[in-house]
Length: 186
Image: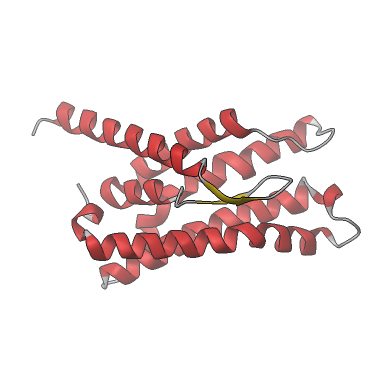
């Protein structure tokens, strides 16, 4: 297989995963008032790209997805300044979605491939949660209803990211058990 064909094939696959992730992100099990929702496996396509094509392609696909998610559902805090707006874009979109592409890196130390897939998926979901948590503390703190901002952010973001993480890890593990070749490096 030629190098051009291989890159073209990877780009097409990444584009299809972005499309699939976008469709799945719009199938919401529940949605919170100030942003955040539990979706039907919307992070799985980006984790899969990471395992199939490595961190470089996973980060690229996650980054493109972050821009698309921002275009489709940008939600800014009341009266944001330029710095809070930049922080929100970086934490709630760019970093949160791009870093899903690192799942393969966190899976690498595990000899048991299924365990590595599960741990890698869980870790990138945790990183996405941490991005949302930091954004809640640094940017969305004015919505805390009298609670300490870190308590509010922890509770608010855990209320959707914990179920989202469980669904994602279960889906990835079941997918790996059903079709382990999908997770082989291409």
